[in-house]
Length: 341
Image (cartoon, rainbow, N blue to C red):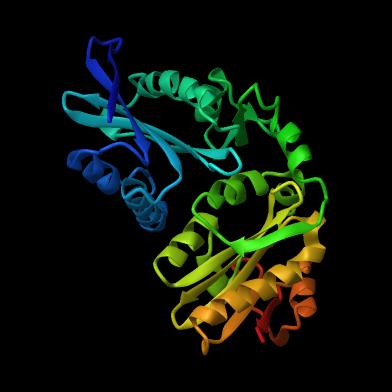
């Protein structure tokens, strides 16, 4: 844990700015307890699931099982008042920015600006190529833009990124090079590094971001993103797998998550690589069967998920049901259920 600077706020309050890099640094117990214990969300409904997964994320990082993580903390009078974070894949250089939070008693005192003045230069000096994030808060978006972030699709909020100028100029520049319509070269089990490629970089490509499909349903709704799926993988409740194209870009990922006695298979795939999806499904099932040989697997998704439906048929899965009434606000929307052979 490195003390970067002792600063003074406009009201004269002393503030210390700390930098934590994992794996590699020794982290004091009181810092671990703060990061694992602080809620970090104003909405308790969001906090219930998200905080549990962030707690697991921090545990992995502090135990040396994480990716390349950088945490920035602001401390006032011995109390941690604000934080910000970025991390990136050591394989691809793609990263995420987020977990930005100021504790309620310390808001509107400029702490985010102090943290960003240290975080952005750290990113630019790191091997990371691009950091992605999303925000629905116009104030946050404007603040991030002051430090070099771009709104990928314009507007006042939405997907954002900051790019290392040595590597590119925009998200679109990176995406055009990475998703070149080349076929899949590698199928493999997922790693913790892959979350940065899957949850933001792949998801924010125009082909994926503008799909506007019905959200996951039934047991599939437990798999909210790659990060949560991989943590279930780590805990022994399933597995994740990814497909890389000729450039080494992750163009698709799968998860089998065991929830309430049901193993549910989910697929996320870039449309340009739809033809490769059945191979990834078969690979995932084979890997799962090695760990859980007798456990049945199913796929649940809304009928507007054409790519998943065609991939499931091509992988020789069997459709066993068509259901309705599972989607709030759209009770007539069909949900397809496949049995995995």
